[in-house]
Amino acid sequence: GAVVSQHPSWVICKSGTSVKIECRSLDFQATTMFWYRQFPKQSLMLMATSNEGSKATYEQGVEKDKFLINHASLTLSTLTVTSAHPEDSSFYICSARDPQTDYEQYFGPGTRLTVT
Amino acid sequence: GQNIDQPTEMTATEGAIVQINCTYQTSGFNGLFWYQQHAGEAPTFLSYNVLDGLEEKGRFSSFLSRSKGYSYLLLKELQMKDSASYLCVFMDSNYQLIWGAGTKLIIKP
Image 1: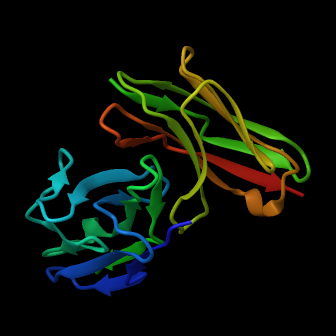
Image 2: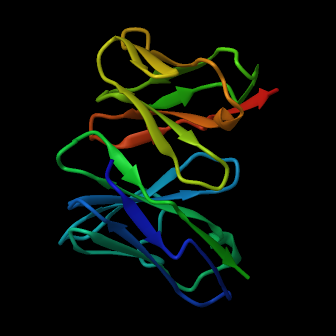
C-alpha cells in the first residue's frame, strides 16, 4: 500500500515556542491530506482538511491561527503548532488520500508532542 | 446527528474467535471502515464495507447492514499480537471519516 511519513516522530518543546510537523506521501500524489489529534485513551479527532494549493478547512473549535497548515505540494503538508502550551501535548497524526482509491486514507506514523 | 457506538473493552482467549459490534446513526453514508490501532501508533486499515454483507480477509471479516446501521468485525484464531484497539469508522456524505472511540481488545493466553 501507499506510504505516508511524518517527521519528527516525537518532539519536546518549551511552552511558548513553535513546532513544525511534516507529513509526506512517499509514492503517490495526495491532493488531500488530513490532520488529526489524539489525546490518551480517546478517539482521533479531525483538526483540519488540507488541499494542495488552497487554504485548509478547519473543524469547529480548532484555532487556525494556532495550528497553521500548509499544503504547498502534492506530497507535503506541514502543521505548525504556534506558541505551544502544555495542553497542546498530544499525538498528532496525518493521513493522505490517494486519488486512485477514493475511499482509503493512508496514515502517517504520528508525532508525539510534549510541551513542557 | 451522527453517532457511533462500540464496546469500550473486550477480553478474549488466544486461539478463540471474537466479534466486535458497532452501531451507527448518520444522515449520509459512504462506507464503513475498521482500523486497528496499537498503543502509541497510528491506525492501520483493516476493512471497508459499502454494501451489505460479509467481507472476508484472512483471519479478519467485516459485516455491514446498512438498514440496521450495524457492523461487526470478526477476528478468528486470535493471536497475542491482536491485542489492540479496534476503531469503527464511517464515511459521511462529505467523504469525511467519523471515528468511534474504539474497542480495546485484550487477548489472554
